Image (cartoon, rainbow over all chains, first blue to last red):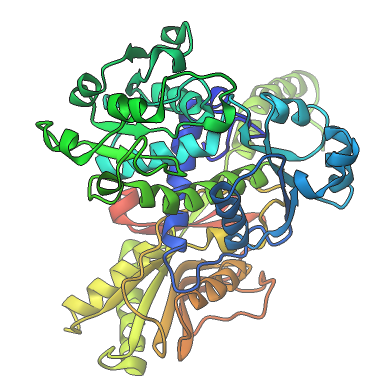
Length: 307
Length: 207
């Protein structure tokens, strides 16, 4: 098998285990490429990719753009804040206008869940979901799993806890799908108000005591508190959140094992994670960023190959 | 002269019986041995000597096996040079050309990439690209682009075990060749190595 089973990357939910293995194997080769003195391959030189961001993003956008350039694709960028979306254009019209400029692939971030799926049914281009509301963020979950695989060798059987704002997090949902698919045990940990009801139906367990969760896990993925998505108060104060669910060096040192600390960024230093933890040798936060480029190159390469 | 009477009936019967097996024989691929294990061994030694003649101590020379099938030949040559001709410090690298191919997205199935492993600098080195079969020359074109990502070699030579002349799409010729073969496009040259396929042998397969 050297082909993905899907034509778009809309979510981890639509992938199977073989797809993830193929993406990781391809990413291994791209990781070698981006560590060469000339970090570029000519593979996608006749492919044009549009990065359409209806929501702010720094690192995801940069990572995608760098991955596209490393593959020699032509790149056009579009952000909603400077566009005709403000003038009332619909999503399909916007994208079709961009596609009539002969674009082969669209990387899209959108505040509405399912926007990528909707688009994939109406336009003729490969769609990569770079985050749709609180739904999925598949490339982030892939790079998280890839980083765990790189650090610990295998994902099957590992214990992973996702800490923080599970309710608003597309990173959490995609990670749960990806980790379960690869045979990991997943726990979510956070204030009860930020854990969706019936999340157990996804095959994860819930823990509200951070210390217990950390004692259980091999890897802790610390999520950012997404203040911008919170229209009501989910916890009394940031200070109280930090006391209950923030990871600090003292807490880590008191565990009888070395766990791996991850964070999808951007970090609120001193809220969900203290600086000494973020910069410690247990943290693989910067490796995640590096791997993000290799994984995104692999995804775009494999999707472009299906055209 | 047509057979008559009983003979004629028998003749038709015989032909009908033969029809089924004859057809399967036609569909089966026939293969002819191009090189035996002994011949391959002689060629390996000759190629090693030709390399020695041009590169002497291999001080500024690196061998690059092209993934996936050129690697076996490259490793074998390096072994002969090391063990039989006492050349120390042979530098051998593996180069994957999947991302440099010119047929990406043109109906061909995605080719799975293989490992690239070049642990030395190719800047100002004499590079010898090694592949098992030289056919259209497109893989070598890709390899020439790929090797540039690792620096600017002083010069690049090409060594192949089998050179299928008359089927080139590009102006590329080997500097060292094991055996020249005149094969038509429908035929395929299959190079097998002991470490991977059980024995050293080269077949010419016709469909």
